[in-house]
Image (cartoon, rainbow, N blue to C red):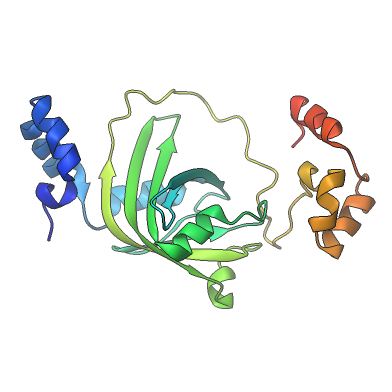
Amino acid sequence: MSGPDAFYTDAQRALQRRAGREALADTVYAAIVAHELGPEHVGFIESRDFFFLSTVDGTGMPTVSYKGGAPGVVRVDGPHRLSFPHFDGNGMFRSMGNADETGKMGLLFIDFETPNRIRVQGTGRVTDDAATLARWPGAKLAVELEVQDVFLNCARYIHKHQRVEASPYVPNAKGEQPHPAWKWIDDIQPALSDEERARTTAEGGVIDQDGYIDRLMRGVS
């Protein structure tokens, strides 16, 4: 089932009627909402080196996070399929855990220079398949997303600015990346792997929480 009545919830419809905007909402739906990825979506998505990812846990509580990588970090695998990697993080696995539990996901792609943006909604599946992970050197997991809705959004409230530089923490072609400063914090050491603790020692040694905050304030992450 598709169409505006399937796309909008009862609560959304109630607010549209209260504001006298139900006809506008139906018109906008017809103009911008699709249920598969077309050429106007694919090129934009595959040119991005970051996106915002929202997921929902089993209690219905959402979370949202920034995901970055090299340009093309999100791959378009067909008109109804996207895939993207999960790189080394802080060990909380909130987004990946939610994806594994409910699969409900929303992705927001933004170009701050144009500006432009695209939203994608669908159901994701987490995988650790070696052949899939090999598409992104350094990936620990990956998500395969079945696309339900995709729509271009008005960009009038996007703050326009020029790009400064790419993150140095994106894994390179060999899957290597710098050791993040938070892995130098003394209280974190017992929870790290032997390899991570050894790297901390080799690259500068342990710091306390104040030292970490000082690094952040100086723009060293």
